[in-house]
Length: 422
Image 1 (cartoon, one colour):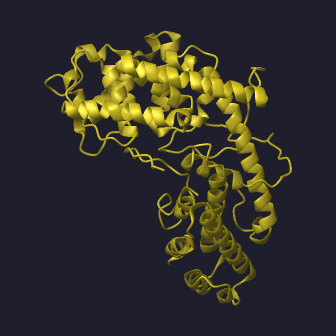
Image 2: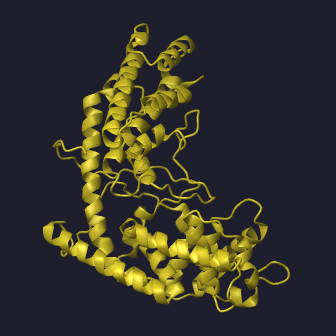
Image 3: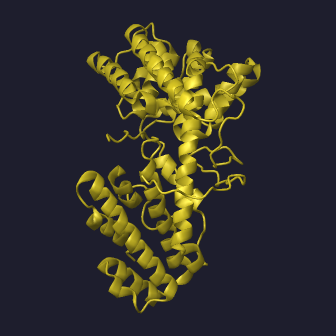
């Protein structure tokens, strides 16, 4: 179950508690190698829910995080059996197209992968993309990362970004052929708007000590800002979006609809658009079901009523799980992870807003003992939260054991103890 919901986010949220928005590291991280069927009441999705703008993740201001389908195209809504068949047909056809393109054109297949990721459908082509990037990396490593002089700045920067995003280390020296003796972009590079945009995107994965990449990345951003007013509409929009929301520091799902209905600079975005629309509505339907499950649990648990001083933000917490477990197949895991995240915030409020020093000491000892008998002397809100935490964690461990054959309850307990350790 996604490693028992990432061991309660133990490596996602640093101890002590943090009530700020989750943020992404600017350095690259390799991706991990890696239901509930009860009927739930309908949920009102008419009220938009917004979370604060993050300094590291770029999120559109006033963005509604509630699932919304695409009503503009009657051919893709609602998602029924006919659309399901169309979805499978489109995916099979595009997988073949991706594989055939990979055999013949290195740059075009990179553009395809970029378009697929921006449309949020990379989970449909996971194996194909992995094979292509593995081949690209092997070729580069075999040639000691030497760059063919025929490669454009855009191709080099795009390959660099895609490989680093996937966890392959590519040295920033690959950009040296586009620099002058002073370590700045040469004249040809400065005049290449598409290349500068790709360099700016690649710069987001710059590691400490990569001064040359840092320099040309910052410089590319400066040139793009000065030239954006002179560009045609399509390119100007692409450059503006890149400067405001670079891909690596953005949540791709929030921008998918931006690519529908206009001619993108990457032609493959248009080619994959029908599948993206179908997938968008399919996933939104799944999100609605997950939110219904989550809100039903939140209401039945009674935590908001018993802990009146605490935060009541289950939808915000759900967004965190969507970010951490983006693949649609992790539906049950997203719901379970959101439950764990909710307790992180509730415990934060208990420690910050409610308990006295002595009460918090006893509460922490109860967490360490992991015994329901240890909470009798605590105030009712703290006792109630502890019991619900105990029950929810025990249930998570049981579900994990049914799915994977072993129960991680001791690891989960240690994670809560570490989080609450004064």
